Image 1: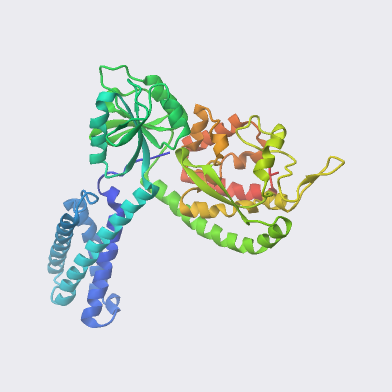
Image 2: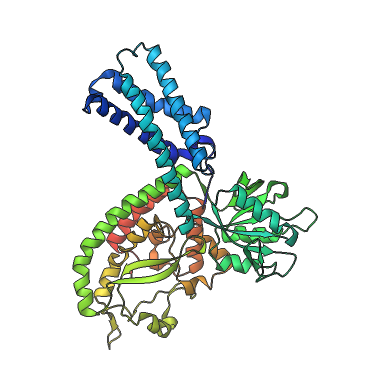
Length: 483
């Protein structure tokens, strides 16, 4: 799923919120310094003034563009912009007080002290927030981008993107289509593929987006673009070289100085994704709290039946191929992975891209009796009631997963994916999803799983997430399809 870029002042909504908080804190502190109490809201003039300051601050930001290029400003330019913001807010405030004839009743000390505190508080919080954003980018918050072009264009494209996109992209590699330069470096970026290997590279690696720019005199790789669209990869193509991509949503935007047609299996606004993330954080907090309580009861039983770690950790494949460490309550014996190869013949799934068996003796306490019946143990119990899934709320809180998404594949499953299978990785993996509430393990055809996941991604909405969450409660309660 592709996050649409915010336009105009909305793209700085985080800085606007921080600035509003700083202004209000400054107003309250200034009143306390002058009057030695916090009773300002007992007076109508100050109550009105607080509300008006809120509106004035927003109007100054919008009409005077005081947050323009905020991420590119250095220390001195930020100070200059902050002083401009404070002076404009104070000036408009003066006009307001003069208009309502409230200047005589309003303390001049509060007026001036508010401006001084606001200037320092706003300046330092902006610097702090920018440093946090940059740290988040360098700690994995960037989007992974592969550039696909010809040899002569590599230098100009990389410099263009680096100079105009505020470090929002991690350029994972370059694919040069007109020459086999794999293993070389150009502009400090590795050449990772050529025309023959680029599709396989994008399918097997963590790649969020691809940018394709081929000179007009060269043959344009329309088939290559269609293959990326089939994989669910976000594709950016210069507007002058548009190609009609199938089954995809499109919009026009900027990458560096290039005007591009961006194509994705699904798109969402920043507000939609923010709402989804807030839901994840709230759900993650509640889920983690319940996990701690469950651990008190589950841990002693697991330890008595199979001494070892209480939590199971495994590398899984997340959004667009990004690897992460998934957590569960351990429901299997410690040698479960070694035993798996002996059970492959019993796999209920239509192929080995997912693994489910009826009698999985790797599960703690599970065994097949001499008469052929299956005796289930404690491991089966926590699985049937989905208790083993609760530690995944830590993954949700970290941002590796979402409450609703697609099932994260294991590394060995992912390595066997065909191109169209990768489309199910176009969104964050979830604790539950459309597949889980549509029959869970009763569905044994992996192609049907892919179809359900792709449908969920292409038709995604917040309301659909809520409906899946509600349906999940029913499915877990009835144990539909669990084994």
